[in-house]
Image (tube, rainbow, N blue to C red):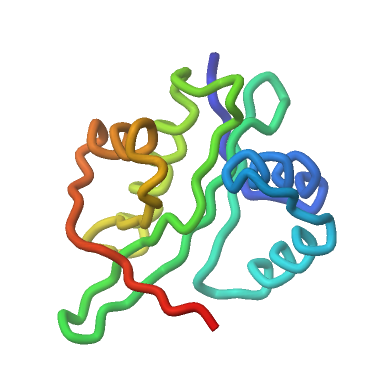
Length: 144
């Protein structure tokens, strides 16, 4: 099965909403999806992509260009990566990560980074480690 990765279009909002719900375990409204799509469409540093198998959207990737001031370098952030549960372990996630890495090289980045929650260590973290990613720290958050 060949994975096709392409720019997301507004017609992909419904299947992507389903993928985000799988990722978070919570419903993601059509209005929220439309809002995010419009935001990214107008952003010079954010991009949405989908992965297709046999014409069906089975993966979603969001990239964001990040600049580091202290080291005067760029990184590509994988801000969202999700594959449909029905196709996991079939190369879709790897294809999306390969795509992200090539996009980073094309943008002159020195690397790719992502944040993944503690609850995903048995599946997602092992996947990233198999791809050569290292754990380098913690993210600290204060909610209001």
